[in-house]
Length: 297
Ligand code: GDP
Image (cartoon, rainbow, N blue to C red):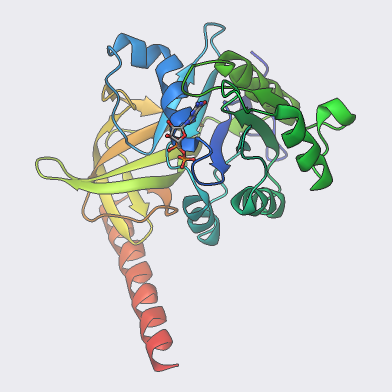
């Protein structure tokens, strides 16, 4: 294992990429996520039963893995970014091979560029008789994307989400992109994470799906999540298995919060209930103040 030291002397280890799927409506974002989820070993072990928890992990036979955010579309990406959550490492830009570049394709490109997140293009629906992947590539080049085929560094993979074609190539392309980016995170020390989805379960109370950014999250940790706080009662992986600790790039479901946080909220570990309550109260009053100011202006 490569061990590298940051400026502060903390130990940094390679981590998996976190990927968001974007593209024009009906170009197959949801279908692609469904198909990718089915390639996950975990999904196979669970007999194909998968829950929508906001994220899933595809584990490759090589041991490498990729974390996918399970909320397609730009709204989620923008909401997270607006709240300062730079959680995505790579954007998969889905473009339908029959339809080509459309307004929301351009919007996705502009989001990714603004966020400085590299793009891997998935030309979808290549099974269709009227598919024209070359036309799509030419369109993307005229929009300023430096595709590999034209001497740039953006990979393009031709896929069919519904026929399950090219998914392995897409996953390999994402791993290659991630290697180029040399993604690393600190694994020791207190956890930092971002919420991607939160809800209330009737039996288990507030539940938050968070993607780990750095450090180690452990059961029993006191956490502040946005303006909410709690003591972690249980951490589950995306297959619903209870785990004791979680490290960088892992999506986890956290149980034990007193309230429901928002997508994009950050998760920080604090050392006491008192400190957690104080931070949470401070943030709640700030939110309230902001709300009142907005009303009066
Ligand atoms: P989204 O709006 O981008 O999430 O698109 P969807 O995943 O909902 O797909 C829109 C439509 O395109 C659905 O009817 C899908 O069955 C269809 N579709 C998605 N991927 C493919 C594909 O690879 N081939 C074909 N032929 N149809 C597809």
